[in-house]
Image (cartoon, rainbow, N blue to C red):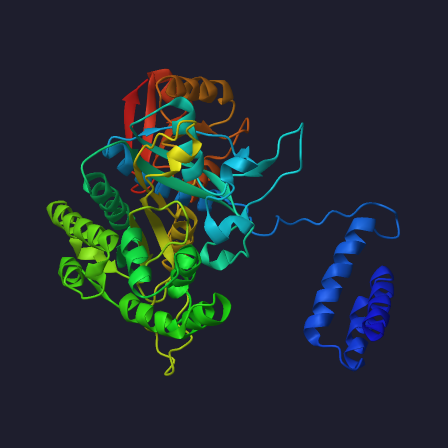
Length: 506
């Protein structure tokens, strides 16, 4: 500790004297100090130096975005808008209307709804006697909205930012501030019809975005709870064991089993029995087989869930969506509010994100790049907010827009794809000098007609500069004014790509 303190003093004196580099190099000779410690302390001291300012006494701002956030340039925003357009188009095609809710909620609204993930909620400083938190997702605010307004049926979508005090992995689209795109159906309907439509929506969106191969995993919380019961999991450990099973997409079974036994106190026998079930995948045939399973058939709730899985697959066949859907008993989704069907969509193409580190021969293999959509049924959540406990059955899906965007951005860069950042259709240009007023008049007429147009902000721009701007920006047409065109009452319209020109009466 003393040695590290001496080290900090020497680094700080070097930084303040702008002699950091030789000072820091000499510190490698300190015994017991690692490179990681040096880097960490230098980063802290650089930040401190920026805060207190240099020798001139001026405050030096650190120009960076907050951890887990990012800026988006025009090209990136163009890609985002394209993704949003595809998703919103799908939601509207299925008859959804939209709502909005505040970015923060009363803390008690969010407390106790997310299981072990509750530790990721951002709490805000007390302002005016209200304890507030930033919303963690859009589902709990939606349930609060339904209860507060006494709404018993609605099909809605909501696209907005949510916040999680998570460890960000920004290269894989994991942030602390990010958008969610939610579609939910609330109301009392016959079993599995709304649930099947939610899965159909995921299928349509991921197919329409052309992200590559994907898989939609489905399961049911009743099947999980029934499985835990017949495997000998105590009732009070259902939720915590479910949260551990939910890590199977990130951790091997051996590590998940170790957490169950060593950290959660589950018996080895119960963990091994769970391991046999969570390795199973299939479709309607697997549901039929498990209904005949000696252990699972003993649980009424597991049988109810398995029967609904069979019904779900029959509807998905009618929706022509079974090609990407798999019944996977390892899918858990750790959020506490799920009561029935749960699902998650993952991309499986190789080379989009990271290749498995377990590939021994160095060759690329098909790997999951993470969840890009997820959801399920939550029939009890609205009743938690209703003063009389009246329940409104709900099922919904959330599209992971940030991860999808990260993948599409990578694809655009890999293909050297030129992305238009504006939607301008016409550039109003002039071939001669002193035609600024005529250009402004014409561009105004185009705007009034609803045509996207622009003009260069110079009195006498060169025609070549105006044409180059069109090529760089992807503007397809140029309306060229000249003295002869004005005399003849026409406008010369030029197609930028082919350079073909035609005269049109003004």
